Amino acid sequence: MIFYLIAFGIVVTAILTIASRNSVVSALWLVACLFAQAILMVTLEAHLVAAMQVLLYAGAIMVLILFVIMLLNLTPKELKWKFIAGERLILGSGVIYLAGVMGLALWIIYKKGASFVPAAGGGTAGTVEAVGKLLLTKYALPFELVSVTLLVAIVGAILTGRGK
Amino acid sequence: MEYIVLSVIIFCIGVAGILLRRNLIIILMSVELMLSASNISFVAFSKMHGNLDGQAVVLLLYVLAACEAAVGLAIIVGLFRLKGSVDIQLFRDLKK
Image (cartoon, rainbow over all chains, first blue to last red; front, top):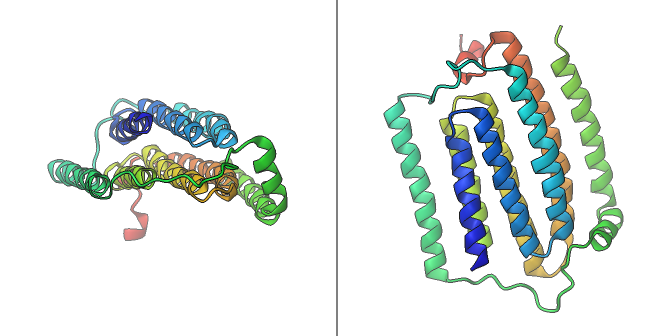
């Protein structure tokens, strides 16, 4: 039951994220969505992941995005609702697309029922110790490679954003 | 099952945001939404299989999301410098 409550919150905030006119409002809805996802991860016993979701995703990344939105300082003209092509056509097809996705998802849940079965025997609590040990033993190589990726991204962002 | 369906729904909302909106920043946020949808299914699979591998991968994915946001925002700032707007309809130089 609590899952459906959180899932409803996540879906509503996600739709509001892409439907908000103003980018700042949109970013704040995305923060709410990521926060709700963190709550969902707590219910799945992924405690470290939930904490990192709030700190890194809803914290650091969203602060970066909000900072850039403030930096660009868009005029009210820029904030108008804009679509790729004809407004009616795009809005109509978007609504049909989202309604189709939702309908399909509800149909699957209705047809198959709630078949999510957690593995027996516990041992899935994502504590800092357990996940950290896994990250530095089995996933040591990906961990190092991802740090290289981060370095490349930093250099790339500086070079791209430096301008002339 | 419900977790995967939820993940698919969020992913599709992100796709809709990319396809429908013209604001570059909102398109970047839609990409973040799609990335976060994959996190949900990773954590759900981790719980389903009774090991922690999925959660370890999610922690690596956060770093990749941060990389993507940093590079994407740098590109957006560069494009804004070029045209003075973040409307993707203006960026059609390759079409000429």
